[in-house]
Image (cartoon, rainbow, N blue to C red; front, side):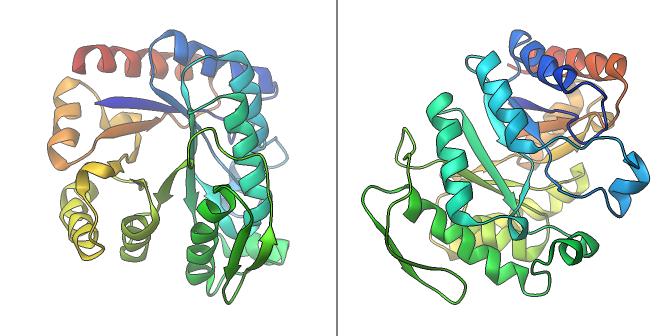
Length: 277
C-alpha cells in the first residue's frame, strides 16, 4: 500500500513556505506522493473557510516542491478542467515533468462549484463531455510530432506544443466518485481518484471494475487511489480494510491550517506506511 499526503495550499496559511516545507518533510519520512488542491476564486464554501486568506496556486506550489525534493511523486487533487485549457495545461505539466522526471501525476476532474464557473465565465452545464474531450486531447499534445484533433470543443491542426514528457505520457488520474466519473476513469485514466469513505470504495470498486471490463481495460493497469480523511485511518487494521475494499493507494487529507496538527498527521501517515509495507 502506497500513501500520499495532501498539502494545505487550500487552507490559508500565511506563509507558502510552510506548505513547501511539509512536502520536504513528507519525502524525508518516506511518503510516496504529495498532492495539491485547485480552485481559483475564494467563493462558496471556500470563502466561508478562508474569507480573504490565500488559496495558493496548485501548479506553482508543485514547481517549488519539485525544486526542493528529489523523488516524491507530485500530484494534483484535482485540477478543475473547465477553468483551464488543454494546450496550456499540457505545456505546464510537461514542464513540471522536465523539472522532475517521471514524478508527475495529473489528477483531473470536472468540478462542482457552479458559482465559481459563473464568476470565471466557464462552462458548467455540459462540463462532463467538454472535460472528456479535454482529457482525450492531452496525450495527443504530449505525443511526438504535430498534434491534430477535430472535436466539438477543441480543434488542432498540425500544432506543436512542447516540451514533451520524459516518458510517452504523464499519468492521468480521474477524480470524482459518481458513475460518470468512474466511466471517465475507466475510459481515459491511468487511475481513479475519488473523494471517498471506506463504504464508498467497498460498494463502488466492483462497479468501477465492471466499467473497466466494458472498455476492455485491465484492472492491473490502473491505480485506485481514494482521497481519504485522516480520521478514517486510525490504525493498521483500517489500512487493511481499505486494501481489502480495493484501494491500491491512499491519499490522506488532514484538513486544517494548524501546522502542529498537520505534522502530527504526516507522522501518523508515515508510521502507517512503515507498518503496512
